[in-house]
Amino acid sequence: MAKPVLQVIIGSTRPGRVGPAIARWFFDIAAAEGTFDVELVDLVEFDLPVFNEPRHPITKQYEFEYTKRWAETIARADALVFVIPEYNHSFNAATKNAIDYLHHEWKHKPVGIVSYGGMAMGVRAVQALKPIFAGLRLIFSGEVTIPLPLVPVVDGVFSGDEVLNNGARSIVRELTIMSPPLKALRESDAF
Image 1: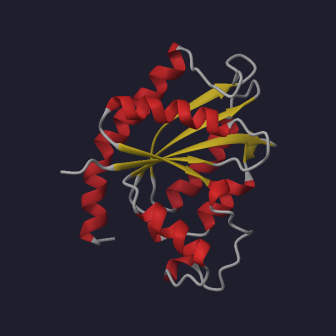
Image 2: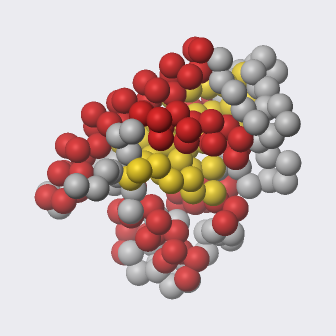
């Protein structure tokens, strides 16, 4: 039997970003747990313009190939973790744009957040994203917030400390518990 799929979504798209290093750190921890087939999903690779589909995503009538590719990717996931920066006391626009492209593909999946920032550690980004997840019926399953001034990315590599590593493992374990019942709910098409 195939393992469920956990997608680690890199939300930052700007040049010089540290998101890929942090996502790789989380990916390695999740893969070591052994309960998921883990995939890195980088928003840069999808190059989504500011939302421009002519029909509401609830219809699933996507016109553009990039939207269809994005929808197929997210539909494959059984669980998700967003790796996001904090910009101006919230999460970044590329993440919101990517979320807005879809509707049903998000529904009834467990989701975690790894956010990073200055001394606020990305906490405000997490808090801003939670109501959006609730509205899409994503089930929040934990967060790790990273203070980059204290635990920096060095030479393109992020190595979490014991607290961050334990937090990441905790998210993976909760996603592991939540994934099967939510998959059953998605498959029942009851909602």
